[in-house]
Image (cartoon, rainbow, N blue to C red; front, side, top):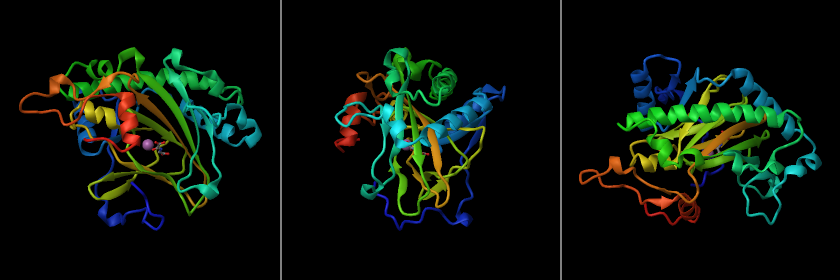
Length: 307
Ligand code: OGA
Ligand code: NI
């Protein structure tokens, strides 16, 4: 979807009586937590989690190291630049802003599983980058398991069902760091839904992430200790449409640099993903075609999808 430059980026506050759910994962009432997560995933496709088990100091270190990397001179960042002829999506990428409709400075590299990691694309400067990112990875994979467990239970399935349906230990985790310098003329990320299964985001203190619900764009409130969870396309497809893949975008700030760290959680690339068999039947026909994840990506990027 194209976003026009003159489109209003904020909705009139008087209309925003609803807010994006904030869910406390330390609540011992498991049924209640499941219920809240399920409701948020059905109605919004997005929620924030607090007391999620990832130490706040670690989130702060990750932010600080990402900032230090992006503030290095271009010549130093080149050590992890994606080669121009590369088919990979990993690496540092920047583009002359004159040619841009949307801002697009980012670094992408795999986090997990170990066999997928190419350290060539992990910054060596700042020196703690690898250590901190590895610690964040251990935490983020654990949190993902927990969230997938709740979402599975909410579908009436075993806790492991969604994880297994995404490839189990072969689930791929990617780090993407977005860097949006001050601007009042371009959008950061145009409206889109993520192709992966689930997206777990932290950002710096500059707000800019917005999600679409009903007929409004809603600002995602910045909470320093929270993780923003987006339901993305594959969870929507596996749940046969019960969970919603949320349309979102990121707007730039006129004065301040915004940064965000989405972790993208993807199925094993040649695994066929579609509505889980336990959720479909005569009365509940599949709403989506089952496709290998890589074919889904190809079709969506080339706009060939039928569902
Ligand atoms: C993305 C994305 C949101 C943000 O990278 O897919 O939606 O807050 N980013 O930058
Ligand atoms: Ni996104």
